Every structure is written in structure tokens, then in C-alpha cells.
Amino acid sequence: MRRVLFFMMAATVLSGGAAYAHHSYAATYDTSKEIKLEGKLVQFVYRNPHSFVHIEAPDEKGAPQRWAVEWSGGGQLANQGVTRDSLKVGDQVVIMGRPSRVTGEFRALMVNLKRPSDGFTWGGRGQIVE
Image (cartoon, rainbow, N blue to C red):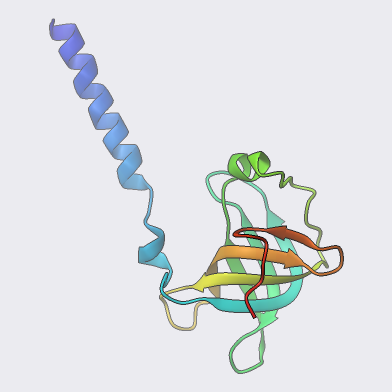
């Protein structure tokens, strides 16, 4: 009986640590806002627990910036048909995302993505909101 109780307590502690370690998107990104980013892909990091798309796109003043756009993990993307070869450096993309809560930080959370050259889309209904 003590052994079962020990394993149950250990499982509770370990699973609680994993849940605590995962952050809330709402703490990092302003989920009440959406921004549109149009630019050139400079890096695609396909990994778990989150993938990232880095693009060069203008900020609200028109100055070019390198944006880090957080995406789903590689396993989740693979289940949705996205592979590490789906996007290439130099691709022109249009991304809708939730902006960072930190002013001046060029980060966003991916809502949807479109590559106009061939119509590749991800997210929502694959539509880019104008």
C-alpha cells in the first residue's frame, strides 16, 4: 500500500511540474489584437515544443525588422501536413499573428500563414484577414 501511495504522489509531483513549466500564450502575447506581417522568410525552426518562423517585415513605422513568430510544435504541424521542407528561406509570406505584450519586441504568435506564390496556407480557414 505504501508503494502505491508513493508512486501516486511521485506521479502527481512530476505531472504538476510539467504543467507549471508550460507558459500561457496570453501572458506573452496580446490575444485581443491581431497584426499582419508581410515579408521574406529568413529562418524556419521546426521543432518541439514550439516551432518558429523568422521573417523580415516592416514595423508600424515601415522600418524593416526581424520578427520571431511562434508556431505549433513540429509533431502537431506534421499532423497538419506541415514538414520542415514546407517553407524555404526567401519565401514571401503573409502572417496574421498576436503581437507580443512587450512594446518594441518583434514577436508574434501565429494565427495563420499564407505563401502567395503557390497558395500554401495554414491556420484558421486558410484565409488572411485584410
